[in-house]
Image (cartoon, rainbow, N blue to C red):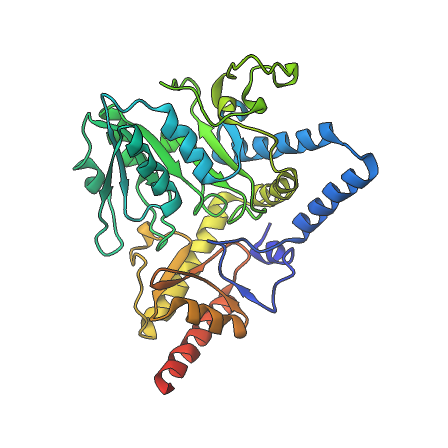
Amino acid sequence: MTPAAFRSHFPIFPATAHLCSCSEGALSDRVMVAMSEFMTSWRVHAAPWQYWMEEVDRARGLFAGLIHAAPEEIAVVSCASEAAFQVAWSLDYRERPRILTNDLEFPSVAHVWLAEEARGASVDFIAHQGGLLDAAAYRARLDTDVSLVSVPLVSYANGLRLPVAEIAREAHRQGARVFVDAYQGAGVMPVDVRELDCDYLTAGTLKYLLGAPGLAFLYVRNGTTHAHEPVLTGWFGRRAPFSFNPRELDFADGARRFTTGTPAIPSAFAGRAGLEMVLETDPGAVFTHVSDLAGHLQGRLLASGFELFSPLDPSQRGPQVAVRVESPEDCAAYLATRGVVVSPRGDVVRLSLHYYNNDEDIERAVDALLAYRERDRQV
């Protein structure tokens, strides 16, 4: 599918330049149809339980295919925070107390690690250097006290792509496990858990996977053992969920042990539709398109005198360009009045690219930012 054909499925274009996929992907006609299918199934069949469960399984299987995992290695969860909690609780921190992470980690994931300090963990944050981090920064802090290394595939803060595979090699050499938050990359860059060599990976459907909130996935490498059984659990985590035995707490093998109760069915319909769209594209072509757009955007912004928080090196840059502004919330509100939707975070506005974006979106965004800057100068 070409970028233009892909873009045609999103009604928001061309009226709006949607540049906030790092927060929420644009709504496609495919997802609207899928949500209608959910409502129709409920109205027509009253209780189409089996049909709904099949939809959840389809979404899980599609995500497994996207990241080159087996379906049995995927647990369906509600969000990345839940995925991180399930991993954190499963570890024993008595002999290896340290969790190694960094300041560019998404706060919700980092907060899960910090909560483990009540159980004896010690969270070690690696400071970024001007928005940059490399494998050497991790290597310098890795030793046999580390139980878990947490590394985002792409940082939410500025779009930095981290060298996950290189970090994972060193972590495994030291006997630590590796958790990857791929939420800011899955859908616009190739993801292969075998090549990354991670033990755990999470992503959800809300952003670049073009679905709705409420559905995420946790990859758990086959054969991974855990010191503790889950305490956040439910009937889908049982070996035989439909035995309905309230007196027996057994745990399914593999990733399914980390599932809890009934999943968000509407989100499964939307997530399946979004994943199908992503999987109809060539991952390499999508990443090339997005990288080219990010380079174009970055070049235009630098030439216009804007200060960027994103990495300048294309090999480190993901699908996002972060621009420093004095008041990100005010800037985003102003840009919205000009039909440009971005995502403010911290002291930057984030402009993120997907396969549906094009050069016209870039020019429209730069023009809007220039107008905002001129407005501020006149105030």
